[in-house]
Image (cartoon, rainbow, N blue to C red; front, side):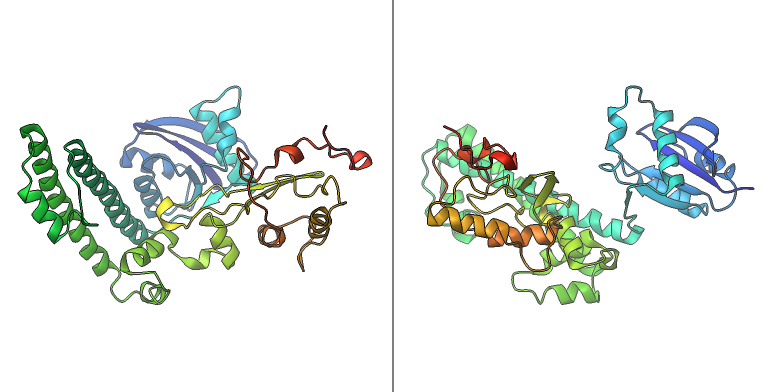
Length: 364
C-alpha cells in the first residue's frame, strides 16, 4: 500500500478524519465520536506507519498518544501557523482536515513540538501549582480588602505571617466581615496544603535531573522557577540556537519590514507568561518607522540620529534578523517621552512622508 497522509480535526465530542494519497487525492472523509477504538479502526485503513497530523487544540493529548501507540508518525500543527483557515469563505471540519493533510503532504506544515508524556505530566504539575498560587493571591487580596472596609491599618509587610496572623485573631470585626475573613483564612490553609504537596511532587519528579540542578546556579533562579523552566522548555536541543530560545520565550522585539517602512515593538509572547521575562520593547522614544532618516539634521541631535540610523551594527544586513533588530535598538539614542506620547512613536515623525524624493518635507 502506498504511503498515506491523514489529517484529523479534533473537537470536544467528535473528530473528522481525512485520508489522502501521496498525489493529493482524497480517499475518504469520516466523522466519528471521540472514541479510542473508533479512531484506531480508522487509522488502520491508512496502512502501516502513516503520516498523521492534528492541530494542538483542546484535549489533543489522548489522540496523539493513541496514534503513536498505533505506529503512526504524528505531527502537531501549530494553531498560529494554521490560523489562515479561519479566513476562508467556506470553512468546515472536513475542509480543515483536508488542509492539514495537504500541508503535511507538501512539507509546508507549521509544526509544533510534540512533548513526550513525561514532560506533559511535569507541565501539568507545574501549571496546576501556578494556578493555585494565583488563586491564593486572590484570596489574600480579599482579606486586605475586608480590612480596608473596616478601617483596619496593617502595620506589617506580611499579613499572613506570624505577626499578621496574631493581628487577624485579635481583630473584632462586624459579624459579616468577621465571617468572611474566617472563611478566607480556612481556604488559604487548604491552598497552602495543596501547594506544598505539589511542590513535593515536582521535587521528586525532578530529583537527579541535571538541567534542573544546573539552572539553579543562575542568580535569582530557585527550585520553583527552575522547575518551570525545565517543564516548559522540555528538550532544549529542539532550539537550534540561544536566539531561537529567546524568541520562543518572548524576549526578542517584533520586527516587521516592508519597503522603506520598518515597524518594531514588543514581541508577542508565545511562551506561557510565567516562564518568560518582561516582554521586549523598544527604548523610550524609539520611532516605529526607524528606517526613515530624521526630518532634519540641522541640529546636533538630528545629526546624531541620522548617523545612528545610517550605521547598522556590525554583521547586520538591512534585512534585519531578530538579533540585528535588538542591536539596532541598543544603538538608538534615547530621549525623554513627551506628555501623552505613545511608547515607540513620535507624533511629529509618524506623519512624515516616506518618499525619498521629499525626505526633507516636514509637517506644518
